[in-house]
Image (cartoon, rainbow, N blue to C red; front, side, top):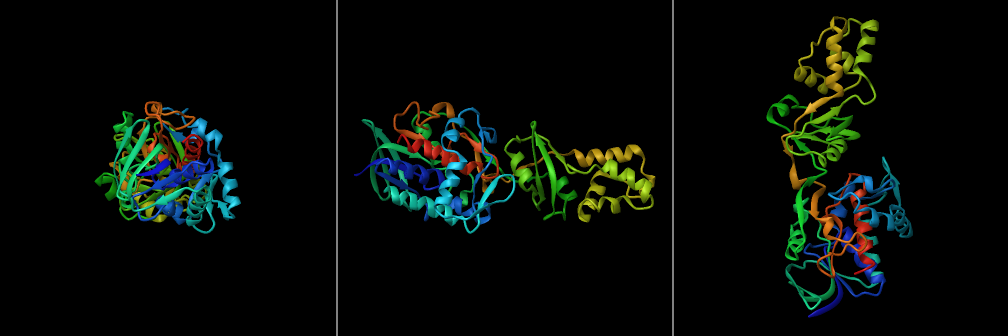
Length: 393
């Protein structure tokens, strides 16, 4: 029997950060992970440069059944606290857009920060550790693993969600929650590309790789960022963001002219260059392949602009400013960056992240029903929730 004060299951962002905080308090801590190496999702994130937080992170950037739950942790360990830690470790970073902070060098800098903090605090990490089952008796948890049997006062579940199964995502965290009587809210893929119905896929065939500035809206929530056409459907930041608010059957409203009005420039063209084809005018504002596809999709008359009626121009303007798409679905957990839903926040203390029903059982990070927007927000939730639990485990 290996005795520890704290066992953390999951060597990702939240788990490692929590372990370091607990170790600083003099707690004996062991982190267990079934993978070959720690921080696998961190290493993949941000194109390998890890978008480790966002300068503008606040409760309004998170989705949860209880939108107030995240406020406590986010206010006690903020993005500025983590930015200070990054600077302390001498990690060079830059802002990309919209407050998103990335490592100049590599995502491995963040993993090294976490492992260094764990080492300094005396928290140890074991990889390739399969966990068969967990029990609780007389206020102690017993964790049966392929590397031995652990006993601890505090058990932290930091196993993440179901996104990206190829790097080891499993429902283990949800199963532990249910085993100990906690409610797990329905899960689904978030921050994920959309797939299209066959008719739309056919109409947009050949546009793969084209990215344009858009404002995408679904269920009264809008995001102004780039949209990318893929061979399966629609991706890019605006689509990933709005996917977290989309439910099957919903229609996406995509404004493809957030700054320029087709009604304005087509009316001007009628005065200045009346003999120019519609496609030529539109090609000043959109890639040619996209113009041709939309002319066919919406059956616009590709004639000299002088022949377009005011009603036709109004229709073109409307279809560009409110292109309505009903996705077939999403690409699912395979490519999703996060998992929506998870352990019900009503079951947890927002101060400590501990279960209200099971003394000593904590849930942090993505396994909890708190999901951030794209852009470093989910990492900030990992740091904030990990820090919060680390003060009490």
